[in-house]
Image 1: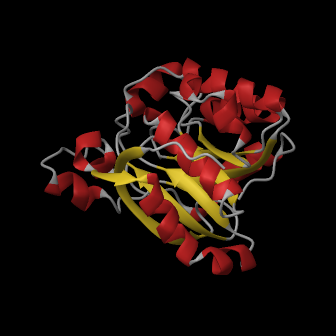
Image 2: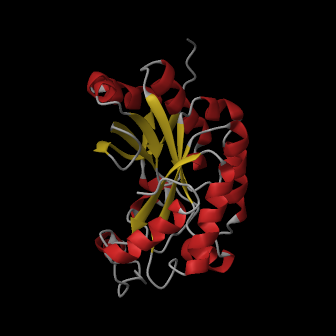
Length: 247
């Protein structure tokens, strides 16, 4: 196999279970993100220059150390961020080598905003896309992220056309994303695609607030409560009514 020399800006890597795709996973967090989500729990990943220049060889070497354990758990490798498609060549190299060199199931964790940067070759090396659809209401989406929604929807439709498996993520924020018509809009869209095998309804939390403070940034959702178990269950039911598996 011919390897393409590749370096990128990496925030960190870690092993995780249950939140970054199926099984135990080696997760590489790339630096840099074009979105400025109000509830982001890793605002320290927003700037690419805040990461460290790292070679694909170094990342693969780290993942190889736990390859057998990961494979035995039914897990794999996830390229996350930040936004990995801000560094599409580097992200593509990692995904390709994780899949073909290490034989791992691969996942791409993305907002979809830069989906146009994902080449067909990159997506061929992706077994699963973890796609964040943060709101259906366009005004709310821009308020949450600072960006327009349409690129994410375009990417979702492209993934559906390719038959690529998607786990959709929706963060439930009381007073921001929890309006019934907003939830129903996301659910109807997800249900129309035909390739969404799971929806993760993620209750808003403030675990990243300390990072905002350390960076001298104003966490505007400081006074926002986490949704109750009942509120979260109600939102999951909206997705289930569209024939989707919601957790």
